[in-house]
Image 1 (cartoon, one colour):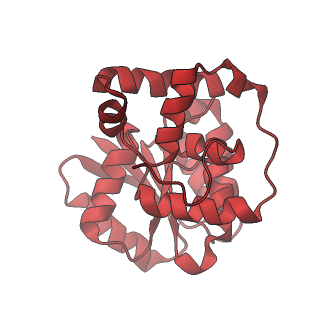
Image 2: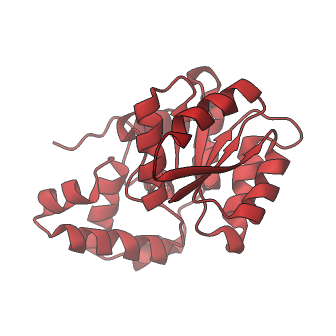
Length: 222
C-alpha cells in the first residue's frame, strides 16, 4: 500500500486529489496539510511514502518544507512530488535540489497523477522526464551553479556514463538497452552512483549532472 500525504492550502485541491487517489486499491491518503509546517509535522507523524507538496503555502512554503523533509534522516524513505503551475517555476530548480523527487502540474490528468505517485513511490524514474529536463535546463541557466563536489571523482567511467543517461531522462531499462546491460546491472549502477553522491533519488542526480556540466540544456540522446 502506497501511503500519501497531501499538502496544499486549497481545500478543494486536496479534496480532488484525495478523491482520485482513494479510488485506487494500492494507494491510501493518510493525512492532509494546509501549510508547509503541517506537512513536515504530519510527515514525521505518519511516515508516508509520497508527499504531494504545493509550493506556495502559508507559514512555511513547499520549498522549505521539502528541504526539511529531505534533511530529516528519520524521513529518508519519504518522497516528495512538487505540485506547481508553469508560471511560477522559478522554484522548481531549487525544489529539486532541495530533495524533491519530481513534479506535477496541478491540472494533470487523473491517470498521470496516479502513475506519478506509483513511480515516485518505487523510486524508478522522474515524473515526465522530458518536461523535467526542459525546466531544469532553463533554470540551470539562470541560477548560479555551485562548484561540483569531489564526490564525482569517485565515479567510474561507466558510472559517469550511466549518470549522464539518467540525466537525459532514460529509465533503467532504457539505459540497459543503450549500454547493452541487463536491467538489474543498470539498476545496480544507479544505486551505487546515488550512494557515492549521497543523494536520495534520481531527480537530484539530474540536477548534479547539469551543475557538473555532464549534460547541457538541449542535449538529447540519439
